[in-house]
Each structure stands twice: as C-alpha cells, then as structure tokens.
Length: 302
Length: 210
Figure 1 (spheres, rainbow over the protein chains, first blue to last red):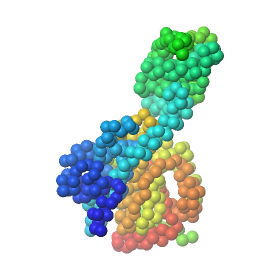
Figure 2: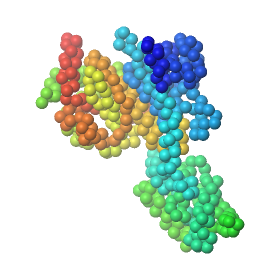
Figure 3: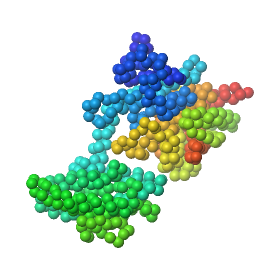
Figure 4: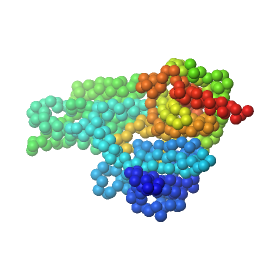
C-alpha cells in the first residue's frame, strides 16, 4: 500500500497546505465530506473552495505552525468547526454543521523548517450532542424546565465576577407562590405541578434572553437580571406579579388562580458575594410575604 | 546529585533564553497581530521540591493562578508551565477572541476563557520553549495543552509524573500585550534523565559560539 492509500483509510480528515495555502493533500475522508475530488482541489488555494477559512484565527494558527513549528489545537468548544460541512437538514440536534476538533502540525522540509501544514479534522458531533444532553440533565429542573439551583449558582458566580470586572449593574429577584400548600391540598399535587410549569412559562415571557430563570426549590423561583438596576428589576418583578395574578389556571376542568410575592435586590459594593445578594433578596421577599402578592426591594422601606 | 548545573551552564542557558525570547517577541507580534514585548528573562535552576515554595513566594494569590501546562517529548523530556495571575485571562480574551466562536447557551464564559488561555499558552510555549530547543538543536514534540491552577506543580509530583529531585528551569519574564500588562511566568521542568542531555546541548551551543 502506498502512503496515499494508507491516509485514505483514516476515519478523519487530512489536508496538507503549503505556505501559499495551496492544497497538497486531500484524503478520502475529505473527498467524502466535501464532495470535492482530489483532482479538483490539488494545487488550488484552499480559500477558493472554503473562503470561510480566510479569517484571523485560521491565519494565526497557520502562522504559528510556520513560524514556530509547533502543533496548534483548534478545539471544538472555541471554534466549533474549521471546514463548514453541513449536517442534514433533518438532524435532530439543532446543530447546523459538523462539529470538529482539529490539529495543525508542521511538515518540515529538508532544511528542518516547516514548509507545509498538516491539518487533521475529527468529527466530534456525536460527543457534542451527548455532552449537551448531559448538561441539560445536569442543569435543568425536570418538572418545570427552568434551570436548576446548581446551574443558577454557577451563573450567579460568573455574573458577579463580570459585575466586578466591568462594574455593570446586576439584580436578582426571588419569588414564591403564595399559599401554595393550600393549592396542593385543595386541588391536588398534580395541579400544583401544573401551576409551577405555567408560572415558569409566564416568567420566561417577561424575561430577556440574557436573564437566567431557575427553580430555587419547592414553589420558589429566582431570576438574575444582568445589566439591570433595582428599579428596572422592580418593574420586571411587578409586571410578572401582575401577569400571575391575572392568569387563570385550569386543572381537570377546575379553574384556579395563584399569586406570588417577590423580593428584589441589586448587587452593591458593600456586598461580599452571592450569599449577600441572595440574603438581601430573601429578606425583601420576607417583607413582601407579610402582604402577599407584593414586590419588595431590598434597601427600600416597602 | 547529577542535576546540578554549573555557573557556566546556567550562564549559557541564560544566553540561549535571551536569544530565544528576543526572536520570539518579533515572531509573536506577527502571529498574533498585536505588539508583544518580552522582557529579558531571568533564568534560575532549582529542584522541583523547591519550586512550589518559590512560586508561592513570587506569585500573589498563587493557588488561584491560571496555569497552562504542556508536556513535551523527544530529545528532551519535560513539561512547560506558563503561569498567569488569577484573572489575567480576562485581559487577554479580547485580543485572542476567536472570530468563529459563538457562545452557546450550554457553554459558560469561563470555559471559553479557559480554551482561549490554552490557545495563547500553546503559542507562547511554542514560541519560547520551541525556539529554545531549536537553538540547542534538539527536536521536541508537544502533547495538547491543558489549563490547571496553582496546584499544578504539586500535582505533577503527587501523580508520580515527576520526582522532587527533577529540576526546574524557571524563566521569569513579563509578557506585555499592547496596553494590557500581563505578567506571565514560564517554567520548564525536565526529568532527571534529561539533565545530561541538556548539559550536552548547552556544551555544544557554548562551543559553537567560541
């Protein structure tokens, strides 16, 4: 078997480019994925067929290989893919392109200097899908579909770090369904579960994409509002309180309503971190709970 | 102990490092398209056992430091550690942000910062360590980089990858990326059995200068 035949047996892509980005090798895997034969691409600039590669990150990686002779690793997490191979339209993962983990290594000439770059392309789409599923299981509250407390805590730490770095405003709202035990006792726990799911949907309608909503436990939810001061956070909480109050729930043809109480707090310089912010919101919630169906802001009288 | 380096060997190592870092700075600027300044490195050789206390003394908040660890194999066998102070990755991210990176809901920003730090580390280690061994005419290959924290050195010993009497070449330098002053420190740890190879390489280099 000659070298080309050996390379064609590899279950990964192999592309070799020279210093002018002309294709010197294009193995069978690449032919199958790209639909371009070796004869078509050999000696041509790779940018003729993949202009998407003509971008700073790829050019930087090539320069690194040619200048320093070291191996560059292009991770899927950061780059998603190098060659844009589309996945079938009916792919159920929601991904549009094959996810790739790539390496770029020097091929040295007789003088010992890198003359070409060998690029390997590994299809890691299945691993990415599996990782996403595991993340979802790990991060999502099974009943309501909101994020769970574990995920929320991680995001809260990140947002607090960002707040400190860029001095952006950050607010947090905890809300709790009023008299939820009575709802469970009188209409049934399944009705209670149904209410939690509907409240999650109502809350998501009021929130932006950058906000993070999580079920904090039992009938308690929490949401994080990046780039938001306490007055704007109070406005969001008030709108959601009003929506919940007006919303008519139905379980097995029996209509019922719930209300919720809200505690709002904004992160300020006097606070140590996530615990202080959560405690401030929780104390505001305690004040709101004295009235029920109310919003209370930490640091305000009511 | 056969890993003791003579004064001449350490001077030669300093000289090679000066040359490696001098050319690396210009090449780095071309590769990353930003002005990179590498200060003249300060080279010391110490036992791995002593390295951790050295790091604790030198680097504020060392346990939370971000470390890019990259092993190399070949005509020299060891690991390069690039130590950045905690939070340095935030300053470097905007310079190296991937143009194709889209942040998915399932990713966290911190994970992406880690990936970017690995790419930066890979470039810096390739530029400096790679150039060092090029000058010494020794061929090495790299394993993929990984990021870890200030426990990296203790971990290398605890996992049995290196012994306390293996030696570390500490190369203290400061990387300045345009207006972002980021102090990075580079450490090269070699196995005891590579000591003799390095000494031979230094001797060859020294005699080539004569």
